[in-house]
Length: 153
Image (cartoon, rainbow, N blue to C red; front, side, top):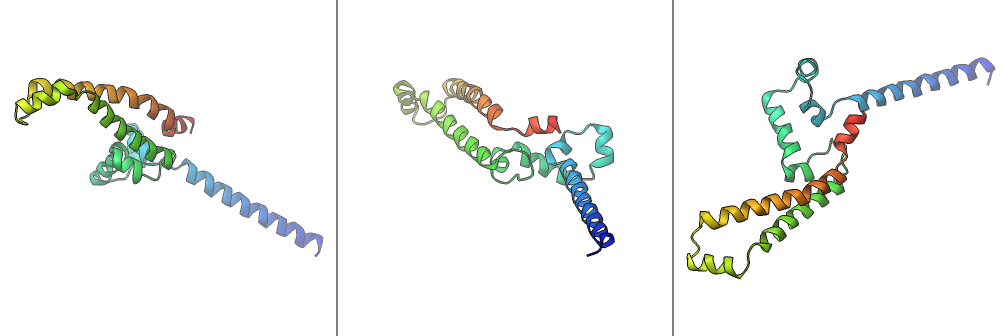
């Protein structure tokens, strides 16, 4: 091979690698669903061309625990960690709720013949929710990295 042909080949490989790198950078810098939902108004007018239904579906994907854990693939969180956090949160909700049902509570339900008593059940439900939320928050904070990666990006 002559020196001239070798230089042309090296040059074409360099340009090809440069084009691949530019495409990869553009793909990485493209907004994902979570970033699009958090855009300011001025940026959203320029970049977000979704309809209302598409925007609503994207909010459901991000905010609903079941869909967020099993269906939302284009975020920066680890899929296995999202699934684990879903099951841990689900189990924790049931465990904390079960802690409030002692013999007195079960006897009260028996005396009322299973009729829902707002005065006793609502405070138990609120306490159970608050305790579960307080216990799940640090796990989500430590396990989910999407917000940190978006801030870094």
